[in-house]
Image 1 (cartoon, rainbow, N blue to C red):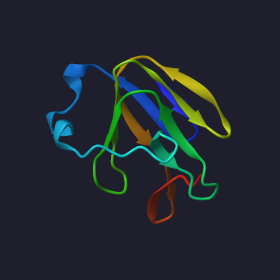
Image 2: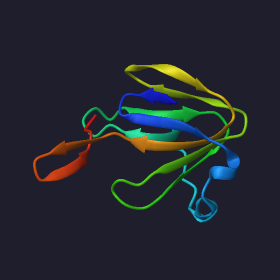
Image 3: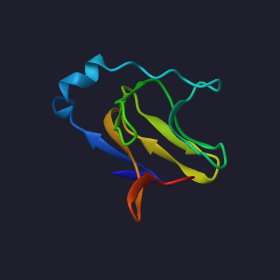
Length: 108
């Protein structure tokens, strides 16, 4: 497993990737050519992936993202050390927090 701030990245065997993931729309790269896993609401900084691959995202406020990096890549952020990822599939989850009466995403 890999963690950078409020983003958790878990390697997944290709056979364990749910079939509906193949039908999810591919997320576009940002203006800097990155696949953005999470954008900081406060700072505008991004947890993003550099390297060839695709990112798809389920719908909903607490939805999972699925990342495919055929050749590996690296996760970058303006305030964190970069993380090298091997080639393969990954499930990406954002950390949540409980506040009385609600569950919400961590604000970065």
